[in-house]
View 1 (cartoon, rainbow over the protein chains, first blue to last red):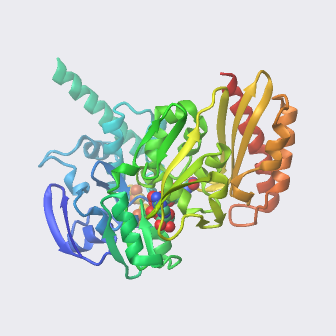
View 2 (cartoon, helix red, strand yellow):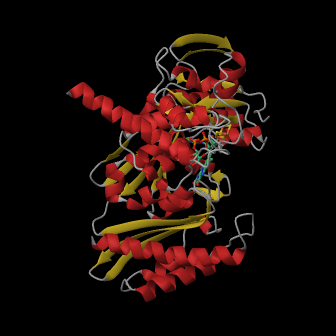
Length: 161
Length: 288
Ligand SMILES: Cc1cc2nc3c(=O)[nH]c(=O)nc-3n(C[C@H](O)[C@H](O)[C@H](O)COP(=O)(O)OP(=O)(O)OC[C@H]3O[C@@H](n4cnc5c(N)ncnc54)[C@H](O)[C@@H]3O)c2cc1C
Ligand code: FES
Ligand code: FES
């Protein structure tokens, strides 16, 4: 079947088998390898990307389901050369080590801050609770997200004064 | 690497279209909602449909509203939408209690209420919550719609009364004053299926219990309900003794099985204890 979808603002059209999983379309067909593929069972969150307005675990979504929709992967997070504050937070707070969980963590974190600009530590941990990190112990991931929240609040204030 | 077997795919654009596609492709066609239960089953070859009918475009099945006498939840409502609904939480806090502990926030953004019920996993949380609330399911077929009480919806594990050519469209719950409800779950870790869980909905008249619904999941309760426990509560004063008796009856009449989530005796213990806790909280809420 033919599908057409927009990934990070670019339209792609491909002929696929309906059984193709979204994560494989993104990584193998479109060669956007920022999204990772881990457990394959919707438990680890390495494959999280945005489908339209929300993060989803793309190992458990068919590429066919993304037909006519928008996808955002970690490659689409930065605005040109300017990192998203969440990315900046991960860099500054040492929010990653091996980086395997990082794209998924950042995409869910971005969603959290869009909906909840001032999350508590518990809110951040809850939001990321479906995603596994084997390296950091989560502490620095939480700090990274909080850093981004503070940064955005400061930006907002600067914009309004 | 786990991938589903070869399958055909059709995107439905309306309920009528989806029903006609189901009729056209016959009993080997399956409705695809969020796919968060179906796709894993297909990866494992536990499900091998010939055709998937994608109903994610059916915005007409995505709503949550009140008619004044009933709360209506469209089958394509995502878990996160139910959790985010003030209306649902106000009338039936049991639904928010349950949603807060179903899977994780990302899964909740995509998995649907209807998919959860139609999957009919014996550990499904919402099945117990809707059993406690004695909800009504609306099922559409090519000939029209029919309604089925929540407690007649499941035939057995992974089986419901929804026929091959049918689609669950809505869950309705009657709005009655004087009620309170709650859900209590024990899981092994964040985001996991329950070891056991219990939901309670009670309606009080003074200090007496007018009616009570108790739902249980993951412990082999028939139709996810604890009828003997409910009967013991009707007309009884809302006291710890009454809750304890209901808990004992709930544990006695369920049939948990030993699995990686725990032994039978532990699950029975949970059935009793969680029934008591859910009742206690439901009654507190009913008193306001
Ligand atoms: C990591 C993870 C953790 C989870 N943890 C929990 C948990 O703790 N508690 C819990 O209760 N659940 C849990 N779930 C299950 C989750 O709630 C379900 O996967 C999800 O809600 C199913 O909805 P869906 O829309 O994805 O259904 P699908 O997978 O699309 O469908 C499931 C089944 O229902 C059928 N179907 C779907 N919609 C309809 C309809 N409207 N009419 C007729 N048939 C239909 C499909 O054909 C299929 O057979 C978990 C899932 C995951 C992936
Ligand atoms: S690879 Fe999708 S959740 Fe792990
Ligand atoms: S940084 Fe290695 S898994 Fe998270």
